[in-house]
Image 1: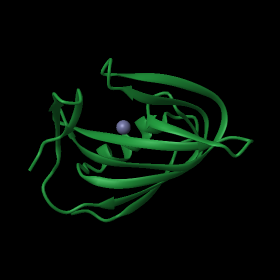
Image 2: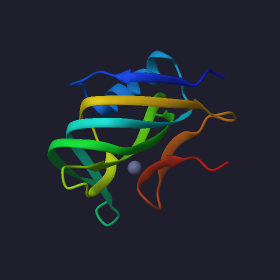
Image 3: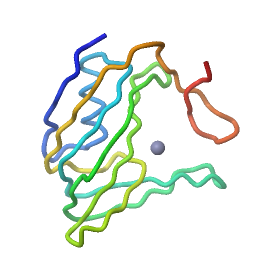
Image 4: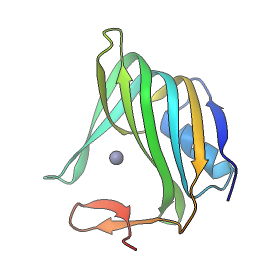
Length: 136
Ligand code: ZN
């Protein structure tokens, strides 16, 4: 078990990559986290169950991170971060989706908490086409 931690993520870096780096450098395989702050561009994913692929959309501009939540577990022997994000712009309207690489940090604060128990491991799930936690 490790201690909860707070981390400021670096401006200009990739949000998903920076979150992953914070867990990888601490060798934390299992966690639950949130991030608030702002981004200068975003790439969000929508999983299409028909094609079994993520459709990505890029959003250019300054956005508040209204909420970004996620978890950390193992996938293919590596520390894997799964995150969803809700953003808002000057019109205060929110939009969101699965956080993809390519989202650039303006300012971001990560708050992470430990989780007890067995390590969840992601495996291919034939019914959805996704890498989901293996059933207990
Ligand atoms: Zn997702």
